[in-house]
Length: 150
Figure 1 (cartoon, rainbow, N blue to C red):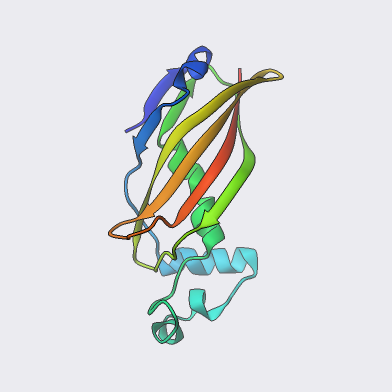
Figure 2: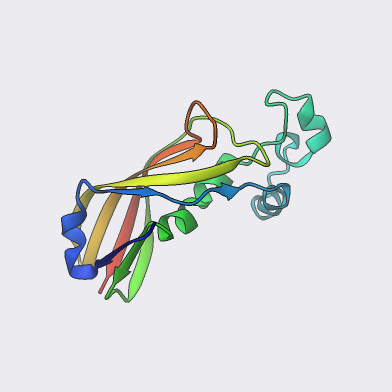
């Protein structure tokens, strides 16, 4: 469910949990495409047959692929009216807590920790957790910085 808010109301979001995104399946095709883009073809990601006998029992997504999905997942949680530009400003902290096996489904939850004014806009500090369906631990825990400009 997407939270819709006016740009001028962003400061009121401090402490708000935005709920969960829809589930999203991680496919071998995604993993292979990411491997090509990142030039990271380690067999635990790209060789399903060999990965069956590896430490995870299946091929896994790159941690940075899972992290990269933060942006489309984030955009499904928050829609801000009255902005001209949205910027992924960076990350203050990232941990890859558990692997994401190919075929698994992930979703994200986000809580707005801070909203601060920056030149021409607002910066949101967002605590995000990307979880794996049925997993005991999250896949990624991060503190994301998002900027919105009017």
